[in-house]
Figure 1 (cartoon, rainbow, N blue to C red):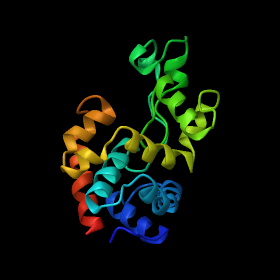
Figure 2: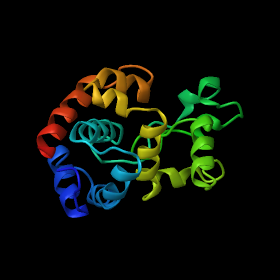
Figure 3: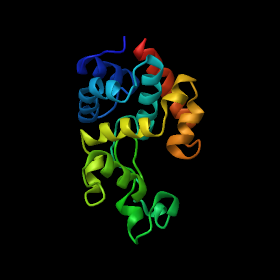
Figure 4: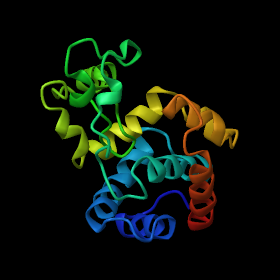
Length: 179
């Protein structure tokens, strides 16, 4: 079953991360029926991979803002951080941890909302959920999900294999919860 109500999505998310924050799980579940259709995250395998990556990126639905200060991203031209203070300003936010001026600018253009001037909005619902699904779509992550390629999806999101074990564990939970 790929068409679920928000209540059904909430039950799935709680099976994946039972200790997730209620406001994050409930907010995400409310958006999932629309987002899975809009962004073609519309098969059980695509949904499992998407939910697994988001569960890891949000620390099992505990946060929508990176714990670190963002100082490590200062001067990272590959992220578009070219202005002093960009590292902290554009640290990871949202369910998929949107990071860097480049990505915040892209989200601003996609949604006609100024995330560059208001980066904190990326870490609030419904934007946090919308941006995660948009990022998934624009980075063509369904192609990795369709091949059941957690490594490929992880590299596309993270730039490496950071947290691969956690992502695999969440994928197993997501597959089970969606079955």
